Image (cartoon, rainbow, N blue to C red):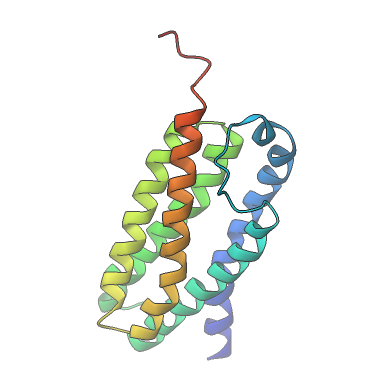
Length: 161
C-alpha cells in the first residue's frame, strides 16, 4: 500500500512545474501590477502550495483506499478531484504565462467551486480526507479575492473602451 499512498500524495506536486513560469514572471510582469496591501509575501506561496498539495494528495489516497481503488464508486469523488487538479494546474499558465487576469479570475472561481464539490463528495467517504481539503479551500478563497483585486485594479491595456 506504500506505492499508491506515495503516488497519490505526490501527484498534485506536478503542479510545481507551473513554478517555472511563475518564477520568471514574479520578478518581471507581476511587479508591474497593482496588488492589494494584504497579499501574502511571495515567499509564502511555495511553502503554502507544498503543504496544500501534500494534504490534498493524501486525502485523495484516503478516498481511493476507502473505495477499493479506482472503482465505479470512485468515479465521481476521484473524477471531481482530477478535475479540480487540472483546473489548479491550469491557473498558473493562464495568469502568469498568458497574463490573462480576467480568464484566470473565471478559472479560479470554477476551481474553487470544483474543490467545494469534491469536498461534498468526499465527506460521506472520509471525513479526514475532507478536512485535509479545508485549508486548500480557505487558501483558494484568499487567492480568488487576490485575483479579483488584481483584475479590478489593473485594467487590460489592450481594451479600446
